[in-house]
Image 1 (cartoon, rainbow, N blue to C red):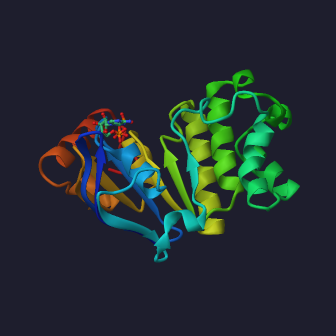
Image 2: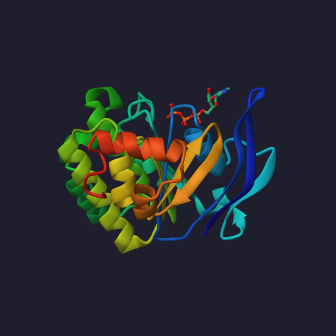
Length: 241
Ligand SMILES: Nc1ncnc2c1ncn2[C@@H]1O[C@H](COP(=O)(O)OP(=O)(O)OP(=O)(O)O)[C@@H](O)[C@H]1O
């Protein structure tokens, strides 16, 4: 299980995360939402060990998170890849580096599910659309069979139909394989439909961790309620309301 215990993280002179505690079990999804600059990407970087907390600790099954080889879907689809390598090399590299192999049928199954044409992995990042690059980023994370997958705005470059389809593929695969998913998103509809819990971040602090039902029906007064109301007004929570 992922445990984030009373974590504080500084970025430069400023405190970007303050007293963050949360946990996430295998097979479960935690959606992290909140305004721009709230600290969502900082939380991912701290979980990955890229930023060191000034206080508190972050573990997976009681050990440093890096020991479980977590997978990351990065926010910027194209810059997530080395521009001079084929996408295939970028997808395979983490697995080859750890001495593993990817069964060909798994790669084909995931490419099909993500609606990626068979030849796409032989191209470079600049030779595919941003939405395709985003789906290759998801492919790279899922193919590794990591027990913990961190998604930073995984669907932001996709059209609505592809978003829905890709979100379903991630959920189905999670049911089959049981990985824990932490998903940072601005899309409250996605958070409510696919999160077992929603964590609302504001100014580096957790305002509330709630089930989608609690968030929609009885959000914490103040910022969480404003966020819920704004999402309702935009029709983003229709399925969950
Ligand atoms: N490299 C950096 N150096 C100093 N401060 C940074 C750095 N990166 C981010 N910050 C600051 O840390 C705070 C949290 O940023 P973070 O990127 O985690 O927010 P976010 O919630 O992911 O935002 P967004 O939704 O816009 O991606 C912000 O105040 C931001 O300006």
